[in-house]
Structure formats: C-alpha cells, structure tokens
Image (tube, rainbow, N blue to C red; front, side, top):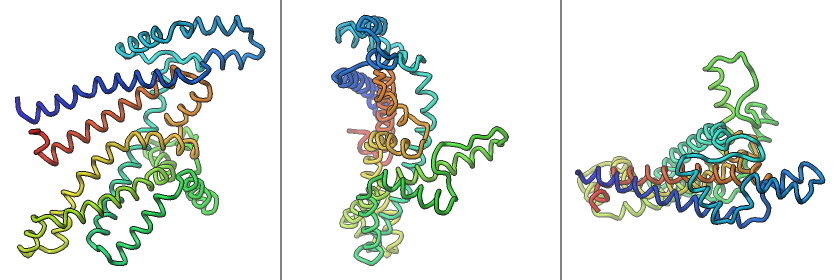
Length: 325
C-alpha cells in the first residue's frame, strides 16, 4: 500500500470517532438546559394541565432516564435516522435537507471570496512591505476585522437596497413563476451578494494579515535568497516561491474556520432573511426543539469534520513530507 493511500485511509478513519464524540457532547450540552418540546407545546396550547404535559413528555420519550435517551439517540444516528421534530411535526432530515443547499451556497461563496481577496491583498501587502500600499491594506484589514458583522450587514442594506435600490435586502430569490433557469440563477446571485460579502469581509481581513505575515517569514528563508541570487525578478520570487509556500497556514486556518463560518451564518441569515440552517437553528432554539437542534448540530459537525479532512488531504498534497510522517 502506498504512503499516500495509507495517509488518506488513516485520516478518513479518524473522522468516525470524532463525529460520534461531537454528537455525544451535543446531546449532553443541550439536555443540561431547562425545558423541552413538551413544555413549549403545552404552553402554546394554553392552560394545559400537568397531566397533559406529562403525557406529551412520555409520548416523546422525554420521561426516560438521560442515559436511555442517549443510547436511543446514538442508536438512531448509527442507522442514519435524525429523528422527528415534535414541534414542526416533520422528520428532522426533511427539514434540514430543505435548508442545507442555501447554507452551503452562502458558505462556499463567502469562503471562496474571502480566500481569493484575502490572499491577493496579503500578497500585494507583503510584496510592497513598508510602502503606502502595505499601510492602506493593513488599516483596511484592521477596520473590517473590528467591525461587527450585523452592523456591516445593516449598513450594506441601507446603502445598496434603500439608498441606491440596486440589490435586494433579503430572501434568497424573488417570488416569480415565469423565470427561466438562467434568470433564476441571476436572481439568486443578486440576493447572494450582500449576505456573502458581509460574511466574507471578516475572513478577508484575517487571511490578508495571515498571508502577509507568512510571506514575510518565507522571504527570510535561504531558498528565497538563492532565487534572488539567480537573478529572478522580485515578482517571480514573490508569486512563485514565497506565495506558494505561504499558502499552507492560510489553507489550514480556512479549514478550522468552517465551524466559525457556520456560526456566523446564523447571524447573517437572520439579518438578511436567508432561508438556511442558521434561521432553522434560531427557530429551533426558541421552540426548544431538541431533536431538530441535535440533527442540525450533527450535520454541521459532519460538514466541519469533512472540511478539515479535505484540508488535511490538500495539505498533504501541497507538502508531501506530511504523507510520510
């Protein structure tokens, strides 16, 4: 078996216990909070008796000891059953499946935009070290990093939706039935611009600063000095020799921040009315819908773990020494 194949198999097998451990932790943390779906349903019915609430709790299986509920939950996960939402009266998988595409679209566009712009600004800043360009990029990155995302989103809505009227202020698409596939794609793209930029700008600042610092460190290495001694242009030294090696910590951080990106999407989806998992988490929290919350957290953990697995494999491709460790 080749070292590369063994590296892929080893990293993939490590995902399974991590996902199960995260699922167990999510279960325990959510059950530490007071209240459950039976309390919410009883309160919504108005004047429900204690007997009615107890019957609801029994029918939902919430009267069982916590360890029994835990084993039932893990047993369902092993059969890929996310359970049933007792509040919305629908399977959890169906509720999540409706929202996952919107959240993944927002996340992929945001992280792609952040990496592209952040890495480009970091390279420019490092190659123009201590110039006015470096100062401008550093100041802008600091301002964007310190700006609250919800405030930035509201200001973008005021500017582009209310004052200029060029972009929609919320939702994922315009309600219309006579759009072609191309028109629908363009319409979704227009709705995507403001939330994706709002979510991405924070990470643009992070990646720009990290790329700049990483490149400045690479510039001190011997192979860069050798490349300069061979008469290569400063542009070639920066783009080919320094930037390619400086990308490794940026890629690592991007994989780690997928979970943070999911958390940030809750706020952004609420501000812009984006119909993704963030809004579903918010509603499930208010309704104490534990089955739905556990399902969302489980799917989110899988997304984060798979993103980190992809980064590990990409890291091994970029730096073959890791494969042989």
